[in-house]
Length: 299
Image 1 (cartoon, rainbow, N blue to C red):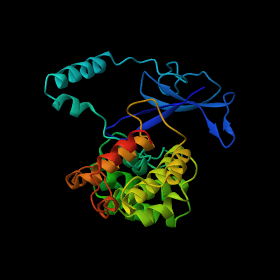
Image 2: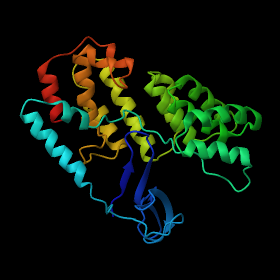
Image 3: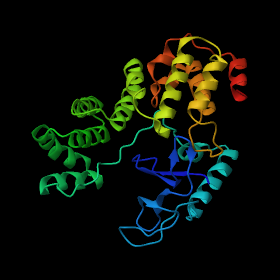
Image 4: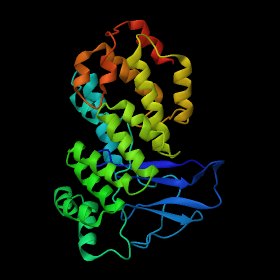
């Protein structure tokens, strides 16, 4: 039984739906990640059926039931406009796939949390990042708990202060080793172009999908930035294995799509100014060889 990932491309909140993965493969007879299509919350349940603990609605553990008809009509209108010479609507709809994945879901409340901690984490969960950060800047140093340092890092990153987010994640790791925090700091550092530092964190980020993808993406980005032409097929093969193959969903990140984007950026210096492209791709002489791009289509 397959798994689905539901995510918001704007705020990075996401959840998995389907049977849990284990070291030996999927085990469809035990726990499932589930999604409530009523109140839009994720849950983990025993078995393949259950009710939402928040609103009581039936949980989805397989293919999502929702149908975004309005979105499909927007896509159709954008394609028709592009055929007519106006590609702006299509450009707005095409996904900007992240190079590095992370998990910016706020920490869960704990029964022993006091009112001040609950208020700060509630603001963070509600998307009020500036207010949450203001409270957490006081709470995290005073309590010196890894969970509150991580919460502060999330608030700072949501507000675009990547340096403060990195510092807060470092303080969280000083409280104890965590693959979750390694994943977040590794992805953050990779986005900032600190590839060597990111590699060290991602090596300790565990085996969840985001960690595997980030390691694969990092190896491919470094390979494209190291020499002209296509990367060594062995590097691309290893990256695909780490990322668990390809995807038929047009909006999902894949090694092939990432490779194509990196080669386009390498051929067009202006593209490096937009998005998350690390500086590594700028170190190679621009390779505008059409044969390289053509080869990437089938690699």
